[in-house]
View (tube, rainbow, N blue to C red):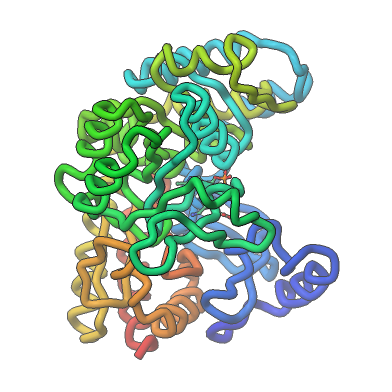
Length: 431
Ligand code: KE4
């Protein structure tokens, strides 16, 4: 396939799609706009592989943006969905499956004493912040530049100009007033966090953070940063919220909080916990979650929340998240990281690799990348050339410098080694 151009079948599908779907896609990043060219239309997936509209095979490092930790079409997940489907797809009534799911989540995440299932990560974070506001009676929420928590209005906010921490809308359609109560701070900036709490601590309802950021590329928290978020929220009566939609069950069975032994007041989950189906969740301390309707005054609802198909896929996935799987993912991640670092050295390209477990990013920068200011300085043109050359070799990598790549349990050493070899060619093509 020519570099940067999808196959002819995908191109013609994309032309049709663009006439009836905004940008031809149902989620913007899929349009490949950040890397040029046009997207590959996928017809099926199996294990670590995707198959394009023209039949081309790709090694998949997106995994549906995180959920496919077991690999695509895992037999146990397919069987669970099939078995559930013949019993009906949604009842709009409580089921034992939802009890099993909630019991499993509260066992996996000791910080979560009660949990509510929803249908997307956006719903989970939107609800969690509404609960934090309802629980505290306060309006201000705090997020960090480079972190993405879904498309709720008050989260589509960028840092104010200069030192102004109170946000301005980062999307058309978001009223200035909606952004006014969202403060945005630099990720990993302890001084800025402490200063905001010193000034506004009594009005802060909650702080939401990706405990390892995936949405500016893979960026780990500085030592003490997550701990300080929890401590300051506790001290000032706010709610600490770990958005583990991406890191949950990715970095350990209990997400980043399980990896580092922390207990935020609330947690948002999605992606892997839904087994690739529309299922996400939010939960936390019992006293906080008891504010949620119908128990308490904070309203949140959803027609398909906790439906039996999605929960069946979720349980089949969660059943398989064992130590052997995480050891395999760590070994594959280390192998890929080492190979990419070596390929960067060989090609003398200005780039670096940042990885936590089985999520990683190749940044086109000398690095290290510790904040959005660092990430946005990356050479995105070089990244685009790299991505196109990688794709042309059958490597399906996130089409944006500001995304994380994911390794799944179906990847093999042979896949990783082929990816490393292709990366060397793609890096050379990026200059
Ligand atoms: P969804 O509403 O897309 O299910 O989840 C929103 C969300 C919340 N929190 C975190 C940490 C997330 O990463 C996401 C969604 N992630 C993006 C990829 N970075 C989903 C891909 C897309 O938008 O198409």
